[in-house]
Length: 278
Image 1 (tube, helix red, strand yellow):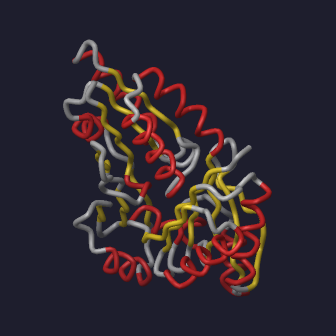
Image 2: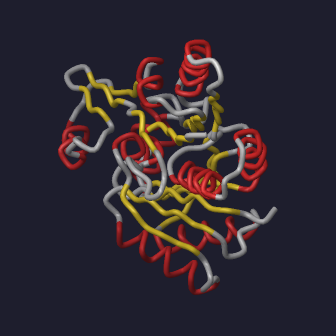
């Protein structure tokens, strides 16, 4: 079968080596402008605009047709989305699956709600690629990836919670207090797919140590780690060095966030997707 991996743009990747892959863009919307999370977006321009913008802003998920376009002519599609607790992406992907399978008898679509966001989707997508390259059948891949997703995690640290508060993800009072006091939040994606604050930290160095401690507590033992940052490569590289100092065999990479994750994480934010052994 001809297999394809499709994610929404919360994954922060627009291509994958050695895989048929498409990214379906989310959008960042204000009363005056719309920013499409695709390779053509000028991210620095978007972040600069949002930093000075005083009106309302929010996000919009891809529609059914955008998912259908991304499926292309694949015999088997694995559609991976941001957590359904934060976006309608999963619901739209499921509706696209129903249309696609009805219009193309014999073709299959597996919709996967990551219950997460950002680099955890990359960890899952890379596993999908591995299973596809191993020549496994569609049903085998679906069973194995759903089992694997029970062992993937997301942890993050944020300097600003302004956009999270504006979109109802955290209390405005908490966001204001963190900004005034210079406190970083360390949090994770919960098993229900919500973003769950864990710790408050003064300073980046302490936040990085807390994140590694939480990763080990959640079963990280030296596997895959995908780090993305919003205008904070120095902290991302420092965290990579911290992980490899304890787990030299770890597969740890660093990259930038694209629009959707940058909108929520804001300048200084880090998001980390990783494998656990439990």
